[in-house]
Length: 260
Image 1: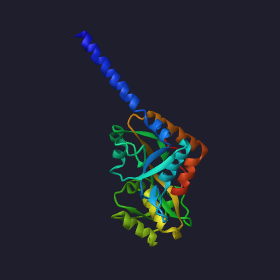
Image 2 (image 1 turned 90 degrees about the horizontal axis):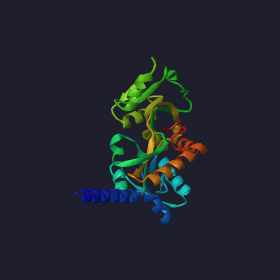
Image 3 (image 1 turned 180 degrees about the vertical axis):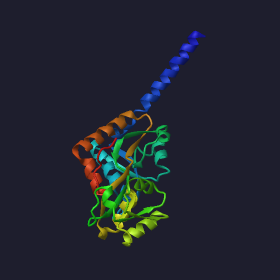
Image 4 (image 1 turned 135 degrees about the vertical axis):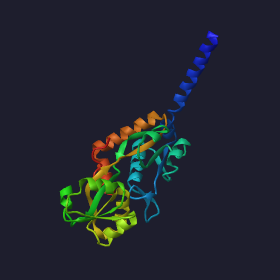
């Protein structure tokens, strides 16, 4: 019985070792085939959307191409939705997911995450002609915001007396009020602002005041530590060189800043 038990334990350990070895093949596979498949958004500007040339563009696409360049491999972009981006990792349809992916305990049970590479935030935006650097500068100005949204809650925490907060029932109403000139400023998420700015360049809208930061992470298949650590190395280099800040400024109008 003792011998049989010992053999069973050895067999179990061997299976675990084999599983661990198998779980470390993603980076080697990428380098061997000289290409990496990266899941990206195409309906979430400014992080990922289809340009007038019908090609994907945005911050997440720039990050995907940067990783491919640093690895010295070809990048194959695969469009995904919020619903299928994690399953794409689990079924090996993608080596990485770079798609405005936030980290939470539930997701950490099924996939691994890189270091943060970009900010995802709620903020106050407005035209270059309106000076806003601090919450106090909101005094005497009008701001549109979507009722009950995170930015509504965060704005309520810092808004001084004398600011006119105009609440709307959805993002469309909030954006329409700003674009039509009913209000001077808008409090909204980065993706909504990016889409609005792309469609209305004549307004000269820019980032004004941060309300809440919630960074994005790159998704890696569970157990693929070699690939995850290599991606972290690339992110660290891009942070040090200023590349992350350049990407964020290009697409979000603000630097990446301090990311966890």
